[in-house]
Length: 154
Image 1 (cartoon, helix red, strand yellow):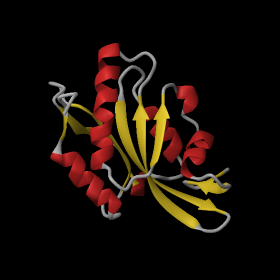
Image 2 (cartoon, rainbow, N blue to C red):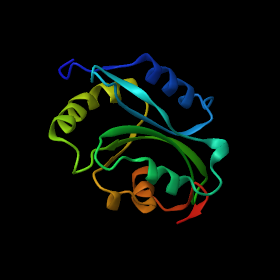
Image 3 (cartoon, rainbow, N blue to C red):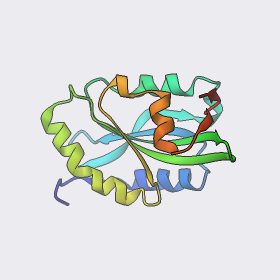
Image 4 (cartoon, rainbow, N blue to C red):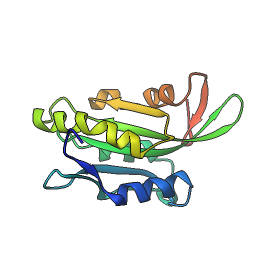
C-alpha cells in the first residue's frame, strides 16, 4: 500500500453488517489510528437507526470535525417517484482547514477504503459545512427526483 495505511478488520466487519442490514446503524465514521497505520472505526461516532427521531441530518452534520479528515458510511432511506429505496453512501470529509499531511494521507488511503466497501456505488466528497446539505446528499443518491430523504420532504 502506497500510503502505508491498512484498513482495520473492524471496518470490514461493520461494513458487512451494514450491507446485510444487520447493524442497526444509520451512520458510522472511520478515521486514522493514533499511529496513522490503520483506518479504524471511530468509537462513539455513529448514529443508530433507533435514535433517528427526525433529526438524522442535523445529528450527522454535527459529527463532522472542523479540521480533521474522516470517512463515513451512511445507510440512507429515501423515496423517489417510483418507490422507497435504501442505499449505502461512502462519504469523504476533507475540510479545507485540515493539515496538509493529513489530507495527503487521507487521499492516498481512499482507494483502499473503496476496495473494502465494494458494492457501494455512491460517493459524496465534502470539503466544507456549506457543502453538507440535504439537497447535496439527495443529488448524490439519485439522478431523478427524490420526494423524501430520511423523513424530510425535499
